[in-house]
Structures are given as structure tokens and as C-alpha cells.
Length: 556
Image (spheres, rainbow, N blue to C red):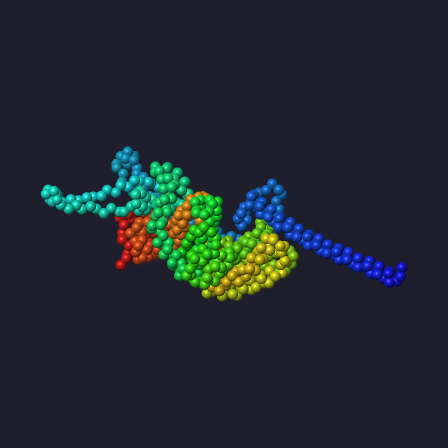
């Protein structure tokens, strides 16, 4: 073999070996990538499995249980100590200050009112207080027959002539129905304030001696709402659009009979509430068949200001507003990325909590001792702690404090986020992406001291509806869902203005039949009018003011 042939053979061998090495390296790289993907998939599946276990066997709340009993060996966990400020126990006079007092004098029997020594009649020395009790009279259902007095002139009647004068009789609240303002208000109050479904009220009325089927109750609510409460709702809606700070949220509901949808379909109840602007509170609910961004866009048409909401992209369709994203949602994402054992040791701070705690620390050193989700929660806990410290300040002072103390926290938080490289599809990745995608809107609250760090104001109103939804399960019709949204709006708005909820709905149903087409009358029936404050801030009263004894509204 010649030298040239040997060189060619050697070159071929080298190229073959090099090709094999490249193939091996490519295979190794591919296997490593596959291993990383499998590890990520394993982590995601473990998170999913843990979530299913929590949903089926554990609690769905973010709050950690104070005490857990287990047959397994208990682990000792060291936590930072804290103290709790206990509210002073209210005295009985404070608890029952608004209740009317009825005195029952216990008399000495007649045969014991003579002196044991001389048998002389004894005189009253004093009447002394011994004890008190709370007496509750259950609801009473009565049949009211309106009898009309008719007058005739006797002199003219002698000549088979003369005039007849008949007394005025209050018109029926709902034509051809026995429904009264008090009865309909009671049903509305029970359903949307107490959370009682119609079928439970049907059983309750049976116990009171009245047969009022659930279908009848629903019909009362729908008709009375459409005729008398809708104008009040529209007036409140117009007032809300004039504000410059609004909170919004949405929650699911179910309607059995809705055109173009199956009974199992998901619909939505949207919630809009006024912010901390020191003006009378307004809370409005609106039923819609879906969750498209067109619904808040249309409802808030004409509103210009700051809109506090969660990170749902549908709110981006609302024009002429500054979106403020809820930090509680962002914190929740990091909390959900925590292992189950870590969740038991970490408390989510609440701005409105009265519990006294030490200022939380954000880990700055030995970061390897903490998992990323734990550090993320710490950043947000620090912000919530500061917000609670600033709670009693004026909006102007609060904004100054925020710029001084909270801006650096946000800056360090987003710098820290850049150092993270979470596994694809993991809960940590979702938390990081959520925070990064809402970087600007999360910090927009810093522009106005009236804005809040979280959207809890609207979320609490969503929970008010969720209580009734849990008991009633569904709405039968679209009209029923729409009526419920209006009733809930008036209930929550009354609560926001410190009114007696039943008395307010009762007063509206008494007066709106005569004033629903008069704007000045509707103005007097808004929850912050002097007339409503005077008549709806005390106890329930369905006896002194009735349909046949109705004082006129103070309209000039």
C-alpha cells in the first residue's frame, strides 16, 4: 500500500471517528434535554397531584389551619412570635342599645300584700331592676283586607239621586297579586341578604301558616324589581360612572334556561364598586352570559378614571381608564407555588387584620436557604404590612409614604425576578410571568393615595353573592338572574351606607309605585338622601309607615 493510500485511509478513519463523536455529542445533548424536560414534567405532575390532593382532601382557602391533628409524628416548626391585640369585650348596653325596652313589673300576689305582723295593707316601696332578657317574636303573616268606605248623601238619596264618595284605596304592588311591600321586601331580604333559597323560604312560610310557592316568590321578585327597583339601579349606575375610582371583579353563576346555552353552561355575575373616595358607597352587580371584555367595556362606558381589578385581560377593553392590578392576586400565585409544608408556616398578611405582628423580613443573604416562591411571598407581605401601617393616613400622606418606602421594594422585587429561571409550566413560572406581565399595572396604585394595594373591596362583594349561590345553586331564568343582580346591588349599597337593609328595600317598594317616573322622587330615595337616612337607619318598622299611611316625600 502506498503512502498516499495510507493517508487516505487514515483520513477516512479520522473522519468516521469525528462523525461518530459528533453523533454521540448530539445524542448526549438530546438525552440531557430529554432529562430536563422529564424533570420539569415530573415537577409539574407532582404539583398537579398535590393540588388535586388539596382540593379533594384539604382546604381550598389560603388561610393556614391553626392546629392540625394527625396520627403521624408531629414536627416541630419554629415561627416568629407575635402578639395579638384583643378587642375589648362589648358591654350589654352597647350591644342592645338600639332595641326598644319593654318593662314587665312582677307584682306581689293580692293575698301576700298584707303585713305578717299587723295585717295592715302594704304600700309600694320601690320597683327594682333584677335582670333582662332578649325576647324575639317570629315573623307574623297576616291577610290584610282593604275595605273601602263609601259615602252617600241621605237627603239626595230620598229623591233617588245624590252623589257617592268613595275612599282612596292603595293600589296593589303587583296587579292581581296578594304581594305587599313588606312581603316582597321580606323575600328579597331573605334571599339576597340572608342567602336563603326560595325552596327554604317556602318551607318557612308553611310553618307560619302561609302557602307561598317558590315560583310565586320568584315572580314577585322579578316583577317588583323590573317595575320599581330598576330605576334606582340605573340612577346608581349613572352616579358610579361619575366617580374617578372604581373596583371591578367577576364571579361565575349558572342559569338553567338561557337561549343558545345549555343548563350546564357557565355565566357570570360582574361586580362594580366605588373606591375609597370618601363619597357614599355604591355597589352594583350585573348579570351577563359570558366573560368577554365587552361586558365591562359597555357597563363602564363614560367612566374615566382608575379601575382596580385583577389581571384578567378582558379589562383591557375598557377605554380611558388607568388599570390597577391587584397585588393579592400576584402574591397568591407565589403562594400556590409553595410546597404544602411551607404553606403551613407562612401567613398571608391582610391590611384589615387587627392582629399585631412583627414587620416581615425580605431575605437578603443566604438566599439558598429559601425557595423562590417563599421569597416572592415575602416581598408582597412586606408591602401589605406597610399598607396596614399607612391605613389611617390621609391619601396625600399615604402616597408620600408609599413613594418613600414601597417603590424601592418593587424595584428590588423585579430585579430579583430577573435572576429566576423556573421550570417550564411550573407554578413558579406562572407566578413569575404573571408579575412580569403586569409590572406596570401592579405599581399604578402608587399614583393615587386613594387607590388600594389589592382588589379585595370588589372581591368581598363577590363573596356576598357566592354565599347565596352556594345555597341556591343556580338561577332558573335570565330574568331571575338579572333581578337578583339588581337586588344584590341595593342590598350591598345599603350596607355600604350603613342602612337597615330590609327597611331600605321596604321603603323603596312603598314609595316607588308613586314616584318611579319622577326624577326628583328617585333622588329622595337614593341611599344617601336625608330622607332615607332618617327612615332607614334604625330598626325595622312595618307598622307606623304602611301603604295606607304613607307620608309624602319631601319634594318641593
